[in-house]
Length: 369
Image 1 (cartoon, one colour):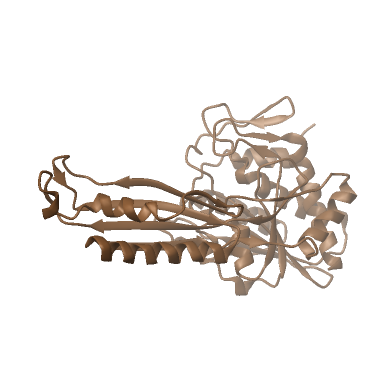
Image 2 (image 1 turned 45 degrees about the vertical axis):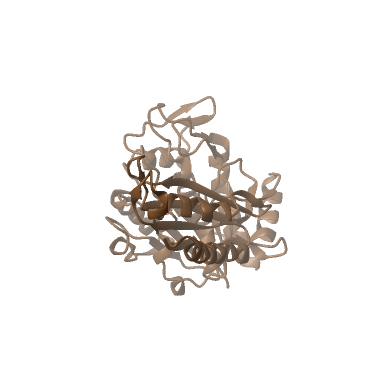
């Protein structure tokens, strides 16, 4: 017996799409949302992302009760996302082993569409439903970076984008920043080091004064490379390094970034090297307490569905980071996939089907808030 949400997931997975190349997917989803009776618009994110072809889709299904809820998922996928051939095997959906499956995050997209249809078919009164299908999430959550939050009425929402079995709720995720270091010294023959200023030494001196790896329970730091091109028989006059920092505490992240800049200035004074230390905050962290509407709603939803709830802390960023930063209180929800970003990605068939039921109940329970 054919299951509509499964058929729709397979249909979407077979549309060739990666980050920045979401045009075909956005067009397909726009048609589906309009067929559901939603008003739909595409924002101008395509013009703000390098080589972007499509913007975020924002849809509204008007309700009959007070209140508003936001449902979100991203439509892009990582590279190796062309030519996907989904297959159903032993209660799971997999690719043919040569590509990703794109359950991250088409399972969330399919669940939202299925949930909307379920609500309409039930005839139940429901609040206003706002839908965000974002682009360019997989390349630093860039799509929602350019989102205008003023267009949403919802004060809370749910981002269907997390690996794990249904029932998992992410109440937090780390914020992320990229750190860049460019060092300029003075070249000299290696036999006469006193005539030069080693850019490598200055860079290493700086990095030795900064924490690396696990800084504390909430913060991690990874200096991913240090490069000093040039011959071994010369004092290097150029060096560069790059890192990323992640923390569940925005103040701790800011403190590390400030320490990085201050230490660079100190090392520059000590060594005579020019130290250009800069950083970019990609997205903030978020934390939603257990007494807030998104978690209370999920407790009621999973109780109705007979699914155990598991509230967990997340690690990497998702659209919920930015949405919380915009003042829309959101949690992340799992839809049954694992092994995402690899050819071993798997989507549990039962979880996908129940995710549509989950969205239906989220909408109905949001009327009570």
